[in-house]
Every structure is written in structure tokens, then in C-alpha cells.
Image (cartoon, rainbow, N blue to C red; front, side, top):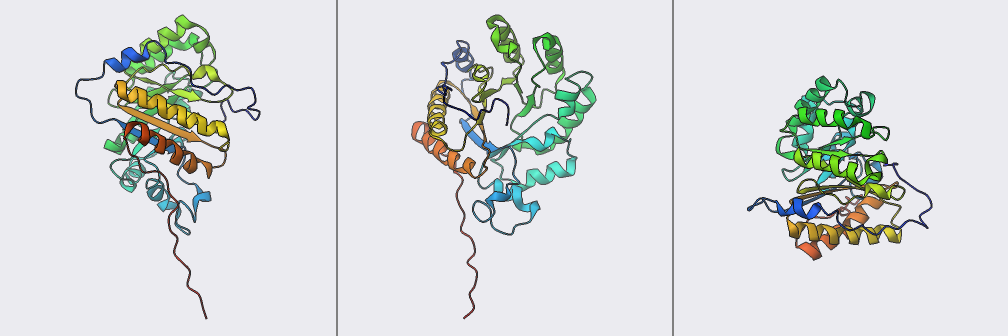
Length: 303
């Protein structure tokens, strides 16, 4: 995730803002008998060749990467669907490669979000939703990332698109144009619309765009995208802060949290996740198995 990435972090304040005033009301409306809360953490891709010999066994075939990824993380921000709509047999293979507790969060194709900017995209949307519907219970929340040029002048188009979006597919929406956040009334309008339509507003924690860290929940699901910087001290401080905020939200009624980690060096993502999940368990009692280096076969020796 290059959006908002900075190379110089000296003047960035990484502390989390206070909750948006409407967040407490959203969490207070959680159903009386919700399911047990769940925390999902993942990366953008599973074909992480740098993990061969550590988090993946050495020498595995490309077709086995997802199987082993799903033994290290319990979710994925599925970026491959941003570039093409997979066919049903492919999606079923993905589904069958992971445990029942795993969740995919597929990104909507750029042909819908960027090329057509949600205009005249019904056919592509239905094709995408039919495809990812094959994930069944392993479907977490689809993810609509709007381009930086998609601004408030397109609010009616966004509303129309979301009204027509298949209700059986849970959806998160990421806004990027600065104007969405610059005007308090406008942000209140769009976030209230998402809340009314049961769509999750994405939270992005990136160095160069602190305005997108709005702390406004619109559903009892948090969808967080975090851009790390190579395990510098602020990465660990942010891990602790997010664990504390999620613990508060889970105590107030949050049902599900998705946290997706973007590090330039993919070797850093498992280490950040280990720290984060340890803090989550300490604060909430929710235990999610962290990524671990797996034992590798010992090569025989000749004497």
C-alpha cells in the first residue's frame, strides 16, 4: 500500500485520534446476543517467496502457497481480485485450501472502482459477487477501494451503487479523496449513509494521510489497513495502540476486526503480527495463533 507512504517519519504523530462521536452509538446497537467477537489479521498476498524456508516449507509448489499462508494468518486482503475476476473453480480451490475459520476479504476489481468509477458497472459487479460467493462461509468482507480522484461530487453515484450492491455480500468502503474528510458535515453525511446501508467504512493508518484515520465505525465491524515502516519503534507503538483501541471497541460491542498489514519487506509482517496478537490476547483474552517459523526438514549427510 503506497498510498500515504512517507520516507521521513520525523514529523508524523502516530498516536490514534479519539473515537468519532458516532462510534459509541454504533457499537451500542449491537444485537443482544452477538456471536463471539473475532479478530482477523492478514497480508495483501499469499505468494510470499521470501518466506520459503521460514514461514513456508522450502521447495513447495506455487499451488501450495495459500495452504501454508492460511496456517500462518487467518485472513487476507485479497488483492488479486482487484486485477481480474476469478472464475468459480479458482475460487472454490481457494476456499478448499484454507481452514473454515479463515476469511478472505477480496478487493473489488479496478475495472469497477477505477476504470468505470462505479458508473455502468452492474454487469461486472454481479459477475464479481457471483464469483466470490463461492467462498461461502470463508468470505469475510469484500472491499471497495475508491480512487483518489473519486470525490464528494460523486456521492449520489456512490449511494446508487451501494443501494444496488448485492445485499448478501458484506462490503467495506475506503474513501481517499481529501475532500471527504475536510468538511465535517460532508463526512457526517457519507458516514451516516454507509451506516444506514450497513457498509463498513475503512480506517487507514498511513503516515502521510492522517485525515483518513477518522475513527468512525459505521458497522460493528472494523476494517483497518496499516502501512508499516520496517519495524521501527513507531510500528510497535501503533501495534500497542491498536490493540488497546480494539479491546475497548470489543468491550463496547464490536463483533469483528480485520487488520491488514502492509510492510515493504514482507519478512516484517509476521513479526509485527506476533507482537500485535500477543497484546490483543493480553487485553481481551481473544487468542489468535500468531505466525511462527516452522521446522524445516534436516538434510541428510554423507559420511
